[in-house]
Length: 209
Image (cartoon, rainbow, N blue to C red; front, side, top):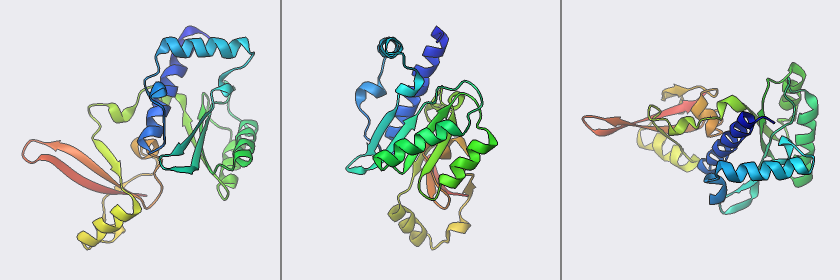
């Protein structure tokens, strides 16, 4: 792997760790603050063992809920991703009894691979990110307002307080980059906080559709 590709993978992994942390998973500080030099050493060790990207699996669990695990898989393929990496990931999930996963790919999925993910949705949830989406953490960008996904209880209290139905809220697409970053699902609500010159801050809520 060329040096710029190593740098790219280091940036992507750093964003992934930040994303997992922001979703409420337990992530060690050493990964959140991983230096490029440390990652390069780890990469050289993997190469010496004749391994590649697929060796950099990330396994995390929700804070205070060790049974709620998520696995992140980086397939080796630098071509359109077929069914094989999906099967490998699904086998790892079955083996460890994990229901949620993130697949970070370098090339788009083939139609068959997308079908395989859809068919697996009854048993597990597999999110797919292209690595170019993760080189920079979009939630850290100064032009992106703060987004805070609401818990089910917070959502219930919000609707009760304003005597609203979810359908009356403004909407945000499931495919929105920030909604995807937080792993949001349809019918969940996100709180968005924007700076305001008059009020100090301006708060809105959006329903994921």
